[in-house]
Length: 272
Image (tube, rainbow, N blue to C red):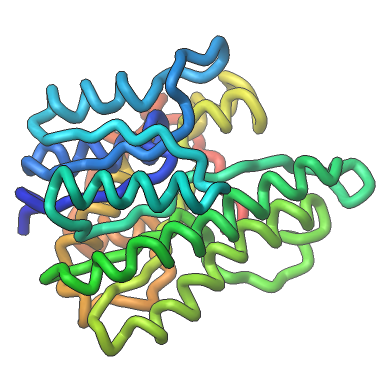
């Protein structure tokens, strides 16, 4: 199946996994709303909403650059309204935007705690709330959270309880919304990488270039997301998918194509 003519609303799409998902959809001829707050180039972070929109257009899709901070309801509402005005509706919502700060309880400033919860858990809830009325008008609507499977083992909480709470908040939205939206036929799923993914966050916050070399490229998440979006929404909901498992099930056998350094020992991601 193809995403030709479908409209995706992707948060945090100016770089990394969000942009990779946008570009994969663009290859099918999809419409993509690039929703992010980066309007001007950042010295340490590549990409803006405008540069990502240009790449989507170059890949074969139609793009709308939406400068929006998902912490603010009016900005999300404006971005969704502009998307519907431009493309006629919303078929797929990708809650990708996320904030990360890995530290223990006494080492986590409340400013960082608030940011993670406002972007990850609250932002996901808000974007879903705003987009659901439009998704109900779609023939095959999907919501996808870039969040981990719910695992209550203490080892995933003890080193960075604030971050885990915020990411699991996104996953709890999957658990609740999948049931809530089953009757109108809106699929709600989560997707998480089995290994670390070569993004700016991994380079700048987790392990520098060394960890990037033991990671996979964002395209593996994009291909897995594409498979999910092309499934019938009434038959594929409430799942906590891992990228590798999705692609194995879809018949992919060559995973070296996704490696930053083919042959390197890969680093498992958090929560795996």
